[in-house]
Length: 322
Image 1: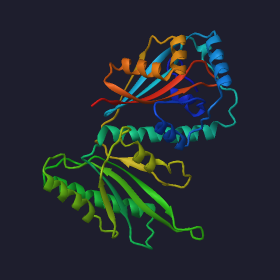
Image 2: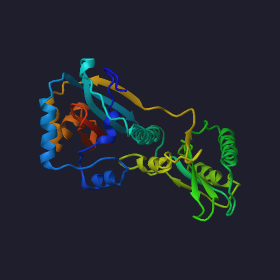
Image 3: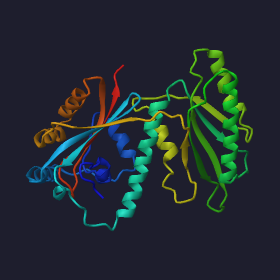
Image 4: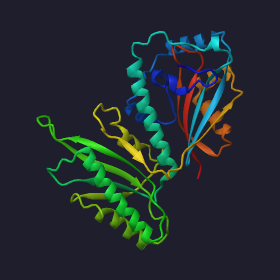
């Protein structure tokens, strides 16, 4: 249900019909995502814009800013001044599937934000595996992971290090089409020592591997963020969250994780300005970078229109300048 004065961008996110991107590779990245979007022709785009501009309902624009480490997400969407102006979707037949897809996208966003807030190139990604032909239950796998984590905590405590921050996910891997046996991997991102002592860093990385005793393989590697921080890894470990099987690819994190900062402000963006932002990628970039006082560089933006509601919806990503 749409709430008055709290109309979220996500409520129409799965009905994206037009996308603006800053670079070709960003466009390719978006095309790889399992988003329910389509590109429409110029004539259809003009029709959508005219419908929005001719709508007599009163609405302004709200900008929602999600700050996660060096990343900023900016969501700009309509805010309605009267309850009678808030649109309602009449057809509810596909509501369950739509909500399922929406929940999955929101899960991915949440994990991306937590990783951006808490992890950097000083931290580690760990993959834990079991012995070949050993198929632990979820409960057994979780217990093995908890035992490994307890050892890591003790190792850090002996050296005066604080409890680690971490996010992990259990991954189910089908053994084959003719068997119901399922192998498991655990993917973990965990904080480093936070110290400049290189020998201690090497010792810690070695401990992460040797403290795992349930299988011959425990791979560790340094975190390598890009312009989008750890978006790729976050999507990888959450890609199975839609799996209907119990416990399939569930993720969890430590209690000491820093949360993203979320603010909302009413803006002076008019319908005409929103239309120009929708049409002109350079103008959109200028508006967004100016909004954040040029402290962040523009990465990409999705500009959305929807058949059920008025206004244009923007979702942009930006990164703190060096």
